[in-house]
Image 1 (cartoon, rainbow, N blue to C red):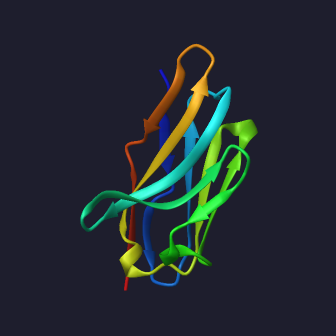
Image 2 (image 1 turned 60 degrees about the horizontal axis):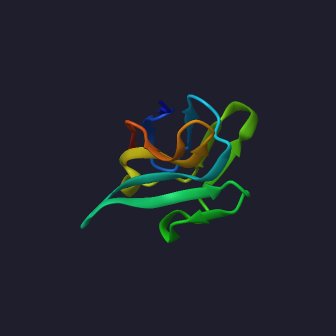
Image 3 (image 1 turned 90 degrees about the horizontal axis):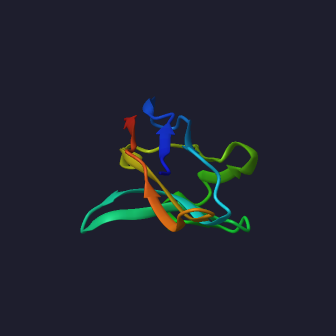
Amino acid sequence: QVQVVESGGGLVQAGGSLRLSCAASRSASVVRAMGWYRPAPGKQRELVASVTGGGVTNYADLVKGRFTVSRDNAKNTMYLQMNSLRPEDTAVYYCNLRGVFSDIGYLEVWGQGTLVTVAS
C-alpha cells in the first residue's frame, strides 16, 4: 500500500507564509505527477499546483506568483511554499500522487489533508 501524508498547515496572518510538505511512504518507479488541491465552490477539489515527474509545474491563476511547488525525489516529498497568503487561501490542502509502482502498477493516492487558515 502507498500513502501520502501532508504536514505544515496552520494559522497565519494575511501576508504571511507557510510551507506545506507531502511525504510518500515509498518511491514510485515512475511519478506521473504530484499536486496540491483544495475544495472549491461547485467542485469537489480544484488544482492549486502540480509538478510532473519531469519537473514541469502548473499553477492555478489565483496562486501564480505567490505559491511555488517543488519535489525532492530523494525524500519522496513534495513541497508547497505559500507566500503572500490571503484569507481566501483558507482551506484544507490535499496532496495527490499519481505514479507507477513496480509491484502495484498505476496508482492514484490522496492524503488526508492539512488545514491552512489565513486570518485577516
